[in-house]
Amino acid sequence: MIETRTDPETRTFGPVEWLALLLVLLVVFRGPIGGLVSDPRLQTWTTVFVSVLVQAVPFLVFGVVLSALIAVFVPRSFWARALPRHPAAAVPAASLAGVVLPGCECGSVPIAGSLIRRGVTPAAALAFLLAAPAINPIVLTATAVAFPDDPEMVVARGLASLVVAVGIGWLWLRLGKTEWIKLPRRPDLDGDSKSRAFWASCRHDVMHAGGFLVVGAAAAATINVIVPESWLRALAAEPLLSILALAILAVLLSICSEADAFVAASLSQFSLTSRLVFLVVGPMVDLKLISMQAGMFGRVFASRFAPATFVTAVVVGTAFGVVVW
Image (tube, rainbow, N blue to C red; front, side, top):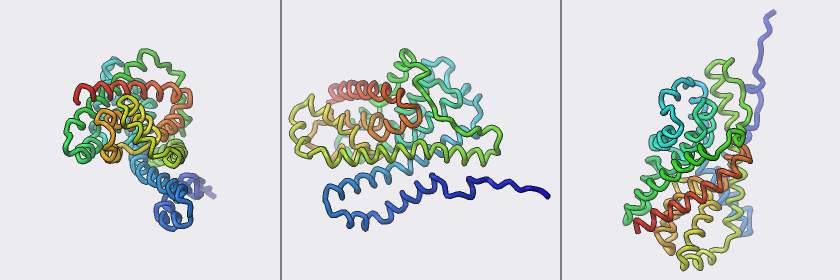
């Protein structure tokens, strides 16, 4: 008698399915759930939480799928041929690769992790992680639509973001340590068929990136409720403080890079320079992104990488704003 092996993953309703079901229910029943919450602050929290997830999940799925495709179907030798051998030259090349991949920061995190697994130097993978959500065509087009009277905002955002990504990549080459990156253990994909390996990779990355995305979305919603709107109006009157305020606000709001330009355009009480900083910082450092980086690369990495990126983005964004305006 031949024993047929059944795969338990195909028969059980696992964590990935529960997460997907939860997200679907939140979207479908957003109205009734909001009606059950009588407190306006709780309604705001629920709205922001669901909105962040709805914005981010499609791009997270895109990144996870692309990450799995890279892990399973792209041979390691491809990256040796596609990127310059010298790490310093590979950093700007990887940054420019972000132009051709439409996605946000939620998708770039698992892709960067997959690139490191496939042998790409961490500096180049991290430069791609920062550049892809900031300079891809969808983000730049959205910025042009949001600022129809200020076309220089598109150029300034693209160039400033590219400079930050390359600068952080080179900084990692100089000061970064391999032991700071702790990628989570992943299923061994080499012994499985391509299809089984692909789905195993997808499930693994969804659990690591998706779980931290939920944590980040909850934190962003809490900040939206706590920070009084009157504080923003007072800070807008001070040039230097307004830059720092919008930089911090970009971190706290955790808006997807495809939508942040419209939020920045609505903050008309702030200067164009401070709004440029908002657009440069947001796709590179925010609560959900820090959470996802901690889940993908480890807390030690996130505790060093996020502050360095934040300072660099603020300085570079401010410098471009001063030159342009």
